[in-house]
Length: 284
Ligand SMILES: Nc1nc(=O)c2c([nH]1)NC[C@@H]1CN(c3ccc(C(=O)N[C@@H](CCC(=O)O)C(=O)O)cc3)C=[N+]21
Image 1 (cartoon, rainbow, N blue to C red):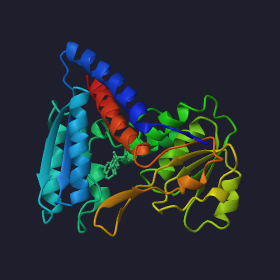
Image 2 (cartoon, protein in one colour):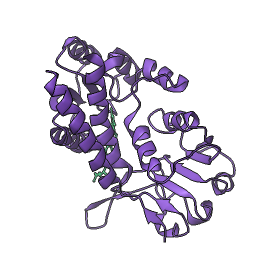
Image 3 (cartoon, rainbow, N blue to C red):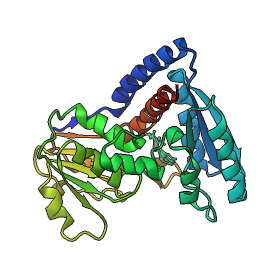
């Protein structure tokens, strides 16, 4: 059977390291703080924001929640971001996505000071990532690398197939893997012969948001599979369940796989806290 990579356990270890870094910053009179901005009342976003805020406490990071009504205009959100950019006691700013229709996300992300952009979504950080020059790295891709680091020590020449080309996962994780000298193939929903391409992979990163897309016959024996999908499905009895992008029950021949839930998700939040501590350190 394939090894299950325990994202919850690895996330706890990352958060313990962050707590130590935070304690050292506090000893120097710096109290790391994260501002989380939520626009509207989408229940799923609400759950994630709550989880982010409660995890901050575990690392000793102060969190500030700012809510705006769904029908707020773009300008009020920009004004709030300006105030958080100016506030020297705030080190990280996260604007929860997706934003309501009618608000231009790119314009909003552009406004966050790159030094406080703990999501790593600002164009300056995207550029730094693509040149490997030390900006803030997006949380999910960073978390994926930390998971892979527990089973891979040398990425050089490994064939990695990334499924999905999003700005949040597919593109940035490809950049991080290239930096480690893996051979990276980025595929997406229009890719021809996707199962054939996947079968050549030593590592598959499934981030298409398509439940159970990656089937057993896509995966070479001994490959490592990272499942980034989190699709919420409603059961007949009204309860909800999270489904990943991989048919994990068909992957017994893989070397290691990540579960959903309990894989990449907890790492995303652990890396958000880590980025907040890094941002605070750099602003000191
Ligand atoms: N500006 C911004 N930054 C984000 O990082 C961001 C965002 N917007 N919008 C939404 C997505 C989604 N996201 C997740 C974080 C944690 C889990 C997570 O902890 N998942 C758990 C359980 C989830 C559950 O049970 O609902 C798991 O997979 O085990 C999932 C998804 C961050 N996002």
